Image (cartoon, rainbow, N blue to C red):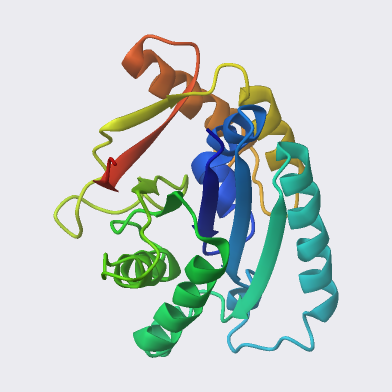
Length: 231
């Protein structure tokens, strides 16, 4: 049975870092995958947010996002323009309303988003907003599976005791789609770093191999299951 999958990520590249191999696997299995990126991903590198000065870089990043998602084969990609690394400056309700509209439009069976215990503030705010937007209210669209991914160079950088630890209890074998994930990451060349940075293509391959070894396969992505509803 074809399923509808929604990935809600903070910044361009987070969707691939967190679940790129799983997204490609869903596509290969005949599912419909929709990718949403909420924050613009550039302006936090300056002292104050200036979209006009960064317009060319934002445009290039948008093109990279489209290329990366095309490599995975996603059905649709939509980029929003929430402020990069400043989503804590917004009322949470404003984020929730946008996500509610997305969920009502896409009507996903499965939704992937960030883990709460990340260093990045945008990841945490989006996690909280997704939980609120996907609350199981009678009469609303019901997301049957809610999963939280790890984001290299954010999840593992949170110190113990500062936030809930990422302790995966859900794994997806991406042995057949790891190469697509790595190719997709290469499309984000501006965002990626050189080894041994945690956000390097080499590090992401090592992580996939390690998560695969956790469950006895060649490569995997790991998640925390937030909720699963069976008919």
